[in-house]
Amino acid sequence: MKNKLQLEGSIADIFDAEFGDYDSNIQFYIDLIEGDKILDLSCGTGRTIIPLSQQGFDCVGLDSSRTLLNHATEKAGMLPITFVLGDMRRFDLHQRFDLILLTGHTFQSFATISEQQRMLRCVRRHLNADGLFVFQMQNLTAALMHGDSSYAFWHAFKDKQGQKIKVFGKRQYDSDDSTLTYRIKRSGQMGDSFSEMRLLLTPLDDVVEALQNEGMEVVHLFSDYQRSPHWKEADNIIVVARILLD
Image (cartoon, rainbow, N blue to C red; front, top):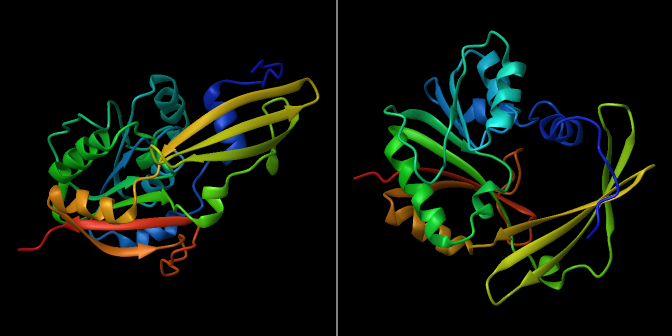
């Protein structure tokens, strides 16, 4: 695929322009936490960890991208957030947290189940005894299995120079390896730009088992950040887990 569209701004600027500077689901996390220490895995540009720090929580953000962390640090200003360059599958911060977050569909961005398992192992080591781990998954619904034959309009945003960008997407599910591939087109006055995102759609029962294998259990399943109960055809699954009780 040939990219013609040149978006104005850095990768981090474009990410914030498309998805917003700050996460709109902050109250969901505030209502869950008992304590004040929060770890945001794959914190990106700080969309979640910065507003949580503004609420007075003791916050750490970890990401594998130095570019995104530098942008997050600049956005955070004088807020007392610790940003760490690291890999979610192999990190050791020598401290425990009351709440660990993995936002978006990052849990499903790992290429293999074993990589998901290694990440869960790290999470378990960093949770306080009564701490919670929250992550989001794309739910494998009947609609997703059918896929899309053509691009559908998703949303629009303006880049750093005020250029309006329309975002379109289509998807294809591969039952052989349980992967969902999104093909994304961003269109502006100067042409089109294309990208792909692949998710490993591990079945919920397998995720529950993986958590149990690492000494954790599910305490809540929601279909959105308004705490609607999980149901089988919901687009998303919000998983809230904790350390297994003796």
